[in-house]
Image 1: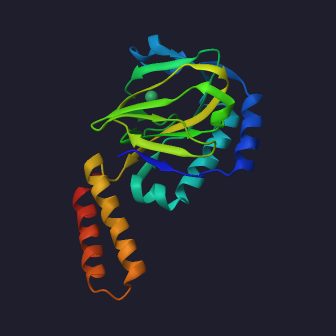
Image 2: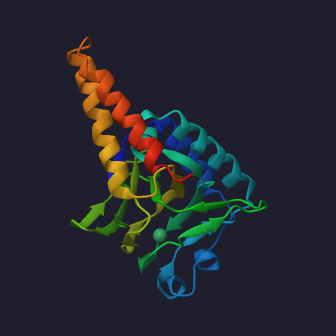
Length: 226
Ligand code: NI
């Protein structure tokens, strides 16, 4: 399931963040790439312990926790602190898979990357290229969203970022461990949840709402792994 979460940040918030990122302390992104990814990655990143990255990351995680569409679709158990990258001068990130498990810096905790998320922070007209291309069972998704919007996709997908041939592309990205590890199960729960919401809006007294809600929670209880 590939889902767009629109307007995670509004225009003013994105402008302010971009101004901070413009002046930030950028480093070669190969520092955090795995063995195979290192040869295909040419971008810049903020260090994980950069105070700006930590501060912005905290705000983004807070915002995610207030975003109903994100919660309903991701069923998040743990969210990695978001990271920040910058692509320019034909910078790109070739085809790769993300690590299955990350340790949370400074703790004993781990996050299984059931979902990957990218928050676009540059407006699409400000750069050429820089599409996030995601391969899944249904083919290829080419994603280039308005600044402030987020794409959520299965962590199991091969993906890449095409070269940025004009302008600068800023983005934040993170991984989420879901209560439900399997993408198909999450998407069934999401469909069921939406159907219950629709039914409740149109026929608030319908007795089937209780049955369906019970089914939803019992499936969630059976399928949750965390
Ligand atoms: Ni990746």
